[in-house]
Amino acid sequence: MSLQGSLSIERMCQMVPVSRRGFYRSLKEQQPAEEEMEVRSAIQQIALQHRRRYGYRRITAELHRRGMPVNHKRVARIMREDNLLGMQPKQFVVTTNSNHKLEIYLNLAGRMKLTGINQLWVADITYIRLKAEFVYLAVILDGFSRKVVGWALDRTLAMRLTIGALQQAIESRQPEPGLVHHSDRGLQYASEEYIKVLENNRVIPSMSRPANPYDNASCESFMKTLKREEIYANNYNDLEHLRANIEEFIEQYYNRLRLHSALGYRPPEEFEQQIEASGAVESRSATMVFFENKENSGKISKGLLGKGTQMPSSKGLLGKGTQMPSPSPDPFSC
Image (tube, rainbow, N blue to C red; front, side, top):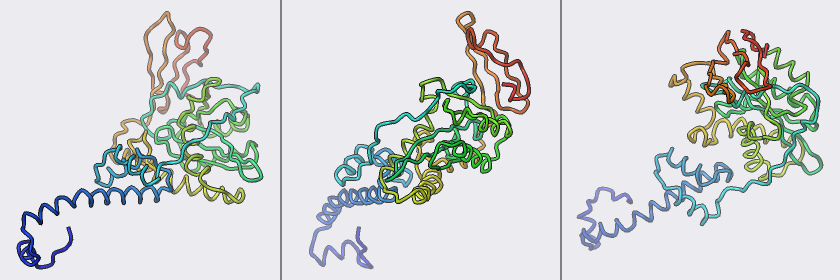
């Protein structure tokens, strides 16, 4: 309602002249239109602020965070009317080369129940097409908070690409011994150089099952988000231009601002800060669950990442033909 100064409603109605009943009836009819304009303006502001990366679900969540309880169907309608619908993803392309004779490690990620950060890291590689060349991006995410903790960009798939992302993650997070690093079975992650860096920092390697990208779903989801919301929406002059834009997207936008549906529509950094402040994480150790074979239908659970934790023997746990190390306090015995 517009400002009326020092005049009362009754005095203004006498000056026009308009009855008080007519004034309030007119005011009641105008309020829905004003509220509609306020919601539409907020939606446009959020969409432009996030460079049209948000769909109607995230915009609805952001409106709720701002104290505007708007239905998601209404948000979708307004976005459709104003041509603000988010950009659609392109077809997924498989880039993993697992045709090698290097050692393959047991898939531990699928058996872990995470309770905090730096218990599971998930790594992956993707390609990006520029005007005159292809370049490659290696990324490492924290499996608990979905935060990007390390990344590297290069023109080739040389070992320095994945090792660079891993070293950046280790320097920024300083993880305790026992962290599990999960990746696909690609040559870059199974190489002696990469495994050596993991061993030197007391990180346990884990690898996906063959031809199953869903074991690495959180990192695959990030790659899809990066390409849909940043790569496909822009043109890059060269590698350095791309590097600057990716750094801004990851460090300033994705980790700090973008609402993540798996985190209750919170950014990764905010999620980590709230978890730490609330003390919701009772233990710094994840839980590892092993399922018995058909002869033994029970289930054995044991802490994996705690200091001095012993791994169970494999007898009767993972099925016929599966081998596990004997109990040892050293995580690299596995």
